[in-house]
Amino acid sequence: MLIRLPTGAVELTIPRAVHTPPPSSIVLARLIDVRPGDTVLDLGCGSGLLAIAAAKLGARRVVAADVDSEALAATRENARRQGVADRVVTREGSWLEAATGEAPFAVIMATPPQTPGPRPFGPRYGGWDGADHLVHIAGAARDHLERRRGRLWMLAISLANPERLRRALAGNYREVQIVHKTDREFSAAEYDSRLPGLMDHLLALREDGKAVFSPTAGGGWVFQNLFFRAARPRAATLPAGAEPDPAGPAATANLAGANARKVGEEYS
Ligand SMILES: C[S@@+](CC[C@H](N)C(=O)[O-])C[C@H]1O[C@@H](n2cnc3c(N)ncnc32)[C@H](O)[C@@H]1O
Image (cartoon, rainbow, N blue to C red; front, side):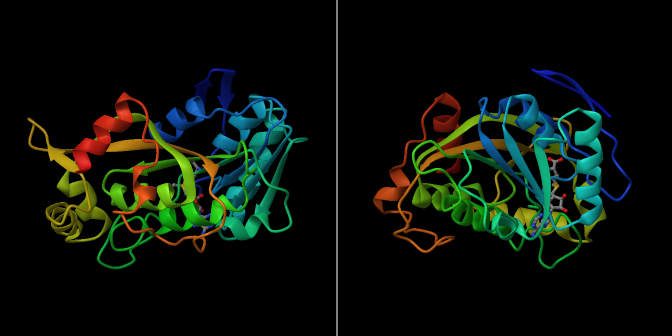
């Protein structure tokens, strides 16, 4: 798979059992604000796209973590072929467990599984509303970021209770932005093929305000990929992962930028 990044083209080899980077991951790889000398953590690295993109931007050390040993092997091989193996190390473990003993990072990136579902159905499952991994990482990453300049980048789909994620981020970081959005069309058949009845579950979440998607003129549906950047981690006053009262001051965190305001309004 050939991927064009601002730093040049990257060729990735992706074994059958390893997640193939979707267009949204490629967009995230182009957005991340990794600076020369940064230390970076790629949570759920898959084939290593984001880790390699960070190294190409000049990161001095990238920890690429996953629970899947095949993903870690693919990341090592892709990093070697891209000439960045000296700066990309792999760690096996669940989310922030993989960062145990590491110094705080300048940048943490994650695109975790986040498809909602009434019950577990496979590797894409993210809990009842899809946001369980996202919200866990939002809280747990805070204490692994450099206090002054650390930033967390996450891709979140608007099917996965984006308002719950926004609240979790606002409780843990002083700056929260949706810096970019892209549309993703889908059909009921696509989701029902993952689990029979899944589209009905999505429609029920939408009715409840926990999933955001719209019908298209062609009879299908469209959701949004939301590219979140959270910076300036708060002091640990809330337990990591805690979700603050949405009416509290944390909910007024800086959702700066036209995209962010637009998306925020759509959720309200
Ligand atoms: C949607 S894929 C994203 C892969 C890669 N970041 C990309 O954008 O192409 C999610 C990745 O998270 C990994 N993963 C799932 N659960 C995990 C966990 N508890 N801890 C760490 N990684 C996990 C999966 O093995 C998979 O590689």
